[in-house]
Length: 207
Image 1 (spheres, rainbow, N blue to C red):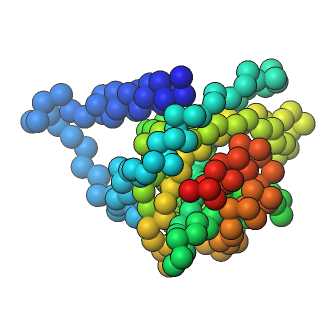
Image 2: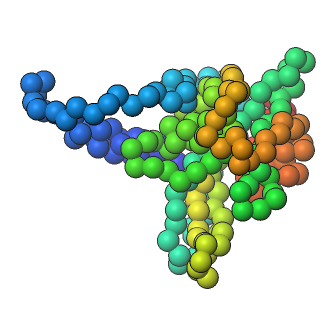
């Protein structure tokens, strides 16, 4: 079911992109300066093919029904990891901007990107990492957070992708706004208070 939802989102994104294209090659077009290609864009289709990712995708459980009547904001992010010289995985954590707690790179899904592409973008913008990402999400969870200047909570639904880091860049948009650290899977599970993320970290440690 989770994969069906994601495929529907990807199809909608492609239809929107197709509508923006001129119907005829000779049709009049507005000429805007070419936009610089962002580093993450060269990795948005670099898919992660490993047995663990396939297993996580197949065993993913849908998020439970929303318990709140408040509108839900869709987000996507990555559980990013790298291999040490001995093969042991290390998980990337980033500091949250609103608290001193640790989290994963994630952000609101923008209309012109698929959930996976959005997750790859957030990994670059918040942590400066690029790499190979699972074709579909490996987990999903819901959480509530307080909105600025509002007493009403915001419900977020976060779709998680597994990202094996290939490169950490020297500069990225939020480099001076967040701290980053690489920790063992066990340490990441303790610092990430969301049960779904903790479970994924434990599973990654077993691989």
